Image 1 (cartoon, rainbow over the protein chains, first blue to last red):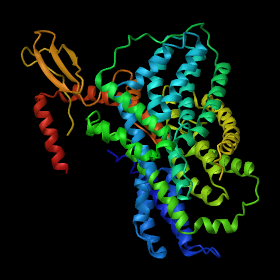
Image 2 (cartoon, chains in turn red, orange; image 1 turned 180 degrees about the vertical axis):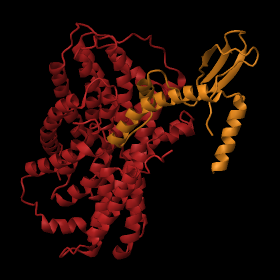
Image 3 (tube, rainbow over the protein chains, first blue to last red; image 1 turned 180 degrees about the horizontal axis):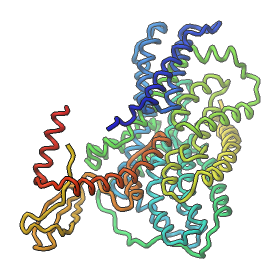
Image 4 (cartoon, rainbow over the protein chains, first blue to last red; image 1 turned 120 degrees about the horizontal axis):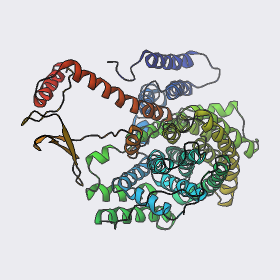
Length: 452
Length: 120
């Protein structure tokens, strides 16, 4: 039986990655300091591996730390802890808290209850049902992983789809609306999707700290605008042939004590996150509340804890560690001597960075794209907040292909539509997303005084 | 080591059985197998993972507990899942027909464990 992943193609890609790193280091680049060159070689290795996924994405994070420890600590005269520390950066703790909340919501079926509660109120008009499904997907993915929210909603949507005629275009509206809404919803909160947290971490490395609520002040309006655009688009492109569609009714049962504990803890945590500017408790510290309550009261056991997306957290840690390497090695400083962006129009600059990021992430993981691009964007841009936010949000709203995001992949697995159908809608949404994200981030950061 | 056999009632030798699925909060799901001929207890299985005849929907249930970083990886798993289950089912049916396995299930499990230890 072949060992999964240990294919000659993957081995070749791994060898190419290392050879590429060595080549980058050995090729003479005039004026480039030695540590920056070493770091550029590490970036080259990480890029190749993150693009090809020859080794798991999180394994590349470990490799980044190993290479940084071997090749950067000496020339920079710094300890290895500099590269290890990002793996327990406050944003990693914040995201861990989000994963813990997500596990508890799923284990005690509260996500399902919330979904059914909202869908029971949408009525039977197809447009309203689509709106309800997308709304639940977007709202849940603000707090849960986009994958989990999509899996739940696609499961519910299938019960509706089975009752529709085989050729009813509304089936496609439902099945496409869910992953796209989940991708869009993830943008709204710092814990919605990993690129958001990476952006916060990278900005913090540059001395810019954004609170939970300030992220939402930018994220929510962009999410709302894209949500309504998507809903309108899907309703027009895939109109229903029937006048009514319904979800089979389920009798609501009263919540038990454990479910109430989860609901109250969830509410308190969100409230503390939203009011952080009043009580001054960092959002990463607030994330300890659900973590402690759920594990301490054994609402989540060892197996549940093991199911937390540790690989995602390690991947994020690797991205932040690479950011530290890029900054400390002087790579961004050297790049800035080549590329002078001081006088460039901020709209054009943000649009260019975001467009590049959105194209890149169509083919590679959003988190990897954010991990690779955000440190460079933050280093190069004269005022990093706007481009960093735009790139972080942009990678999440780029959703052309099934491989672009895990929610897209899940919906595609239903077999209800082909790649061309997804791409047709995805291209329109992504293009509109580029405009909305760039203009939205510029306007909202200006409005809330965040635009450094 | 690989084998497969038809679950058989030790009491009357019957192979017509009914699966009784027992679900308790906080406990693993158990399947009690009942003989259709004599009504006796045949065996009990403790479930680690369930897959229905609609593998995609089973996968959706599993994915509710996961966070993926890679769309590519997620798509691979989605595409492989149903095919793997179907292929395994066909293989097991072939094995049952070809091997005519007579050992008790306990012996099969023990032999598989021994073979695994040897590999280690």
